[in-house]
Image 1 (cartoon, rainbow, N blue to C red):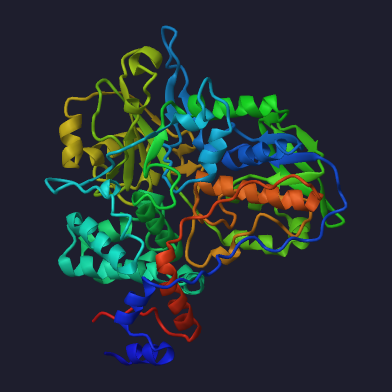
Image 2: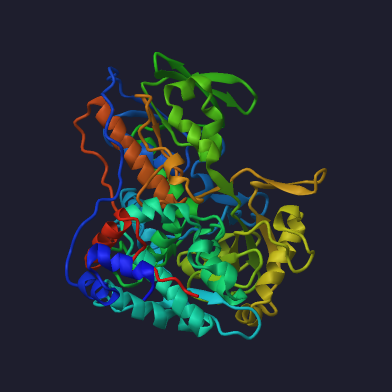
Length: 596
């Protein structure tokens, strides 16, 4: 026993064995930080709301506001739906068909999403009993494909026993058994599971105070371990699952997501199946019906307007400034303003007067955005890779994919899209744009669109199962996210739609939905939320938080939007309570034993 272990036991009277035993038999709840206390209500009692941005956050905010009697106008720079929308491939339709369905990237609705499915069920769709929510279908066979002749892995095929998964010992057994097929050396597998157990039994105080400031790479000790460990344990749980860089991503964020996936697989606290997708292209299944519904309730949409600034007077926003596609300037008047722009655009609007009114917004300058964008391959034959999401785990560009046609039950791809020659679509997300590829020796940021398409296909075909299934399949056409634009002068790409990544120590720099400006509220995946990840769910949750704060500021008697939290296992709370004592005493987690 080392001195650190003795100190821990002296401080709490808890041995490692007793810690694990007692953690499964007692209970103690610890609060998760939420929204800040409300500011004084503003004098304004008007009902006009300008929502600045028409992506997931903006549409969700408009939805909650219009159902509570507010007059809402949504201003969007590009297209409603933001990064989640479908993007028709212009000029591909023939014979009465629709254009081929392109997109920024495939959509993924894990079972721990609650806010987004709730919104979807409140959007009418034909005769669906639960509206757009019934357009979610289960994907049952996700796979992590390996290169060469190595055995494929299947994290999304884990279905632990829900009667044991919630306890520390039960969770350890399930993790060890589930990860045996990942090809990790036994001693590294054991170490990785122990690191997961350290996080699972860590208190909220430690998660925010220590793990928020520790990278996932350092937390799991990746630097000193095998390449297989770095590929599976480090990169596999960051780039492939949540599109974060393992060397800079916060352990708190990655650990929270790992927990959420495990609990969802055990049917604990979930809204639905572990892996869900839509049964139609996004706009057909969701965005178009949503816009129709909001318009029917009175929401007004103004598309083609870029927000250029906010006018501040007396500590309040008196108007917003915008510019249309022709460069003409417009003034936006409202009583309340909800900024639903992505982080990189919102912080351009925080000029000196705005920052003087709320200096905390300056912290957004330190938020980090990275690239995650998609490419679609339209194929001349069905590609039955798997009935779910695919991670090409050995691809340098951290590729994930989904063959979409199999889920679009009311569509016959060749009959309904393009010129009839494509019968399926393999949609692939590229998460690492800074690694060199296998064909041209260049990073994705340095490749032309044609080189990106060839490189992605080559990396996919290096994976044994993919090579077998896709052998003889021809790509009729490919479509790269139009946010990616190659500059031939610099030999590099630009990205108009980057993705926020929760890097180490940025929780404190991310704002809450309520600002110090009494009539300005924030909705976006960069806002502090319980899910704490740049996702559609985070955008929706933040929009609900913004509306809740607005209702309070307006003195409204309307009920606030329903809010949800990630599942917390009651059986884990005793372990977290013990760890809270250790953390306050300046001691490590009881399971955090140094390894030589």
